[in-house]
Length: 182
Image (cartoon, rainbow, N blue to C red; front, side, top):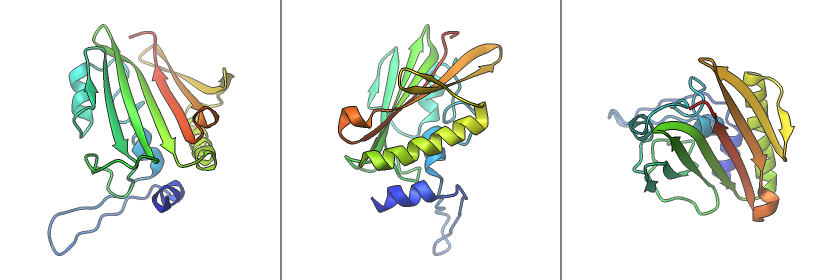
């Protein structure tokens, strides 16, 4: 649990440390950056409309499931060594990403974030809300979700964030990025 709390309070500064003169570099990232990327693209390092190969190359792990219409990954919530994606996954604090394709183009990404309890989930919900609101403006409330809309290359894209902790008896957030234009 210490990792989750320290990650939630991390300001997002990146630190590099060399050990014993070898080139192993440790990078610390914020929990927001781990979950959604550095902000240069809509989600992690892909954009809606990307093809299957681009999405497969964007993640540093072999997918748990890889079908023609979707790809699923389960990832550890490790902000200290974010590239350690093949390490064992904590059964309480982790996240899954499912990339959905329509006509061979990425049109939706679902990220399920599993946390120890609903109070940790509420804190992360607040942090994600602040992040998206500062980037995309005020959200609209829709079916217990917070929804932001944006346009990229003339195409409408939406981001939906909801707290599903009550339904799961643990902390759980659902983050969805989607567009009907791809």
